[in-house]
Amino acid sequence: MRSATPKLLHEVCGRAIIAWPVAAAREAGAGKVVVVEGPDRPLQSLLDGKVTVAVQEQPRGTADAVKSAAEHIGGADTVIVLNGDHPLIRAETLAGLAEAHARSGAAATLATAVLDDPSGYGRVVRAPDGTVERVVETKAPGDASELELRIREISTGIYAFEGRALIGALEEVTPHNAQGEFYLPDVLPIMRAHERSVRAHEIHDASELGINDRVGLAKVRAVAQRRIHEQHMLAGVTIVDPATTVIDVDVRIGPDAVIAPFSSLHGATEIGVGSSIGPLSTVIDTRIGDRATVVHSYLKGADVGDRVSVGPFAYLRPGAVLREGSKAGTFVEIKNSDIGPGTKVPHLSYIGDTDIGERTNIGAGTITANYDGENKNRTSIGAGAFVSVDTMFVAPVRVGDGAYTGAGSVITDDVPPGALGIARARQKNLEGYVERRKQRDSGVQAADGDGKNVPESTGPGSSEATESGPSHE
Image (cartoon, rainbow, N blue to C red; front, side, top):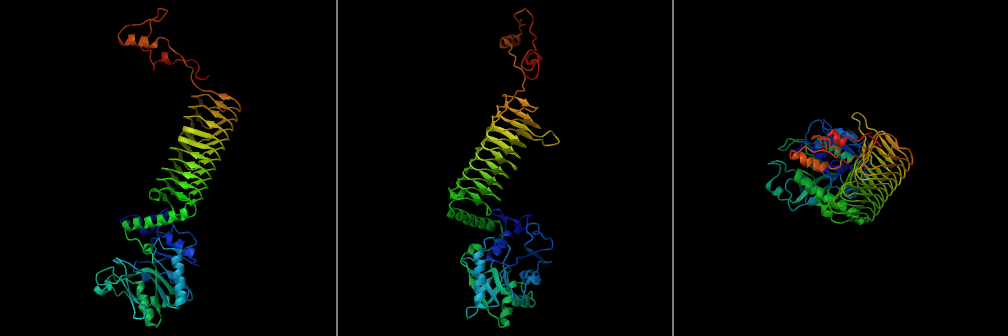
């Protein structure tokens, strides 16, 4: 993979590679799932407590890896062995292999596939009676003969074993190959030598094979994404253009939802019945209710209720809660705030660490100044309030039910219910200012109507121009 990240921790559609075969095994009905990893345990943080971890102290081959898990294998168990880099393996494939193995009465049943280009895979050598004689590895020159390299039937690396036969054969495996490793396929001729049968079970979806590099990762992701899209569409979801839509494996979408082009749905996102997402929207770990709309917006860790309208160009950050029928409009950012039912934040506003009651209107350019340099403070705005444009709330501050603010106000004190809060400088118009400025610029000293000289420093930034008496109305 040429990466600092271990291969099995690379993601395919929102799930680490190793988590895919684990999920498939559980869905297939496995009573126990054992993951073998190295001594550094790079996978440990990803796996939950329901997975048993066995440690292979040194990378000495696949047979040695399985032997590392021997203490977890019972003699009467049916043991399915699969590779951790097979994210596309289906639960149906594993269940089918287990059933075929149970019917055969064999010591081992090998899942095989026939490929047009089998390069890089172990070849399956059949006995005259059609059973499996052995698998020849092709990792290094000398592992396989020219004749064996012409075989197109390959080992998928997925096996079903009788537990007792597997444990016994593992003790007899030797590293007689160019790599000097203990290969798991070598247990097959050992079992045959003990007069036990080895069968093959062909699978027909070659896409269930593994990943060796980032080219393979991209191919596997494309197949996984297609499967995810098909599952949603067959369940009643409209995906307008699957080729431009990204949906992670754990995303849940209700019927009659519409996912428009260039939308990306990630993580534990849930989309309700009849909702419309996109175009050009990214939704991460967010719950969206029924019949909501999200247009050209970015949502992460938010909770969007039924019939809520979001966007375009809205940004909902973690902790943003929008109750039923509310709105976050154009160029609105909301973080860690509760927006009440029917409340509108139509445009050009930042709402952070704020609680807003129902049916309140937030005017354009509203800002809640929630950070004082050391702590985050909350703003509370009641139900039925009317916040005029360009209002700034310096938290902590409370605005009561039905209260109003004047346009352009900086609210630093609580506003009682039903009151009007205004906090802005008085306006003063200087008559004749433009003409006097022109005369000053031309070097002529002007005088006002009383014959008094007007200081040349008078201008937009001077004390004369900005003097306005009391700072608040």
